[in-house]
Length: 180
Image (cartoon, rainbow, N blue to C red; front, side, top):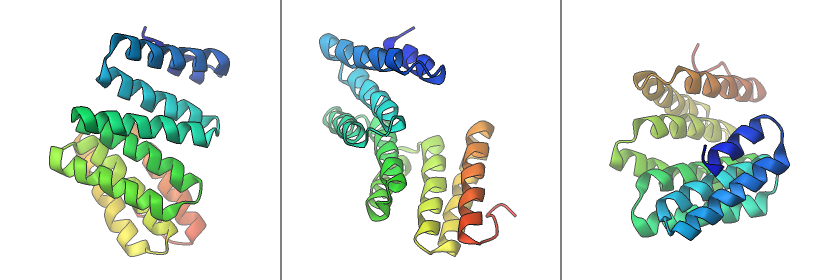
């Protein structure tokens, strides 16, 4: 297994010191190999780990590095995913406008490159952000478009995760769940 995969495995096992070690090793090795694609992926994965540990400043730095590398090498896929991860972190921190702006950039990439699965995730997330900003009808529209894309690509597990978050957000906002 790669260091990044081991980092994810240890994270799921709640062995956080080992997880962090392997994420750092993944970044170090990608730098050593001078592989910008692997480095951008490793930085995104490490950002996700740091975000999960509520180490927001470090996570943001890792995401931003992944975005910068992705742009330099023209890797739209990693850029889109990294932008989406950063947007989620900003949303969870209460930075709603920054989250929406970042997610819209990710969606532009998804649409241009025809990345259906990430686009589905990002549309569902945009629905959640729009709901939080008091726009339930627009939120419903975006979320349903995202759910349809996730159905089309056969990502039932991802859709279920988005459905759970949407139902929680709708309950908190006092609106009918979008899939009813």
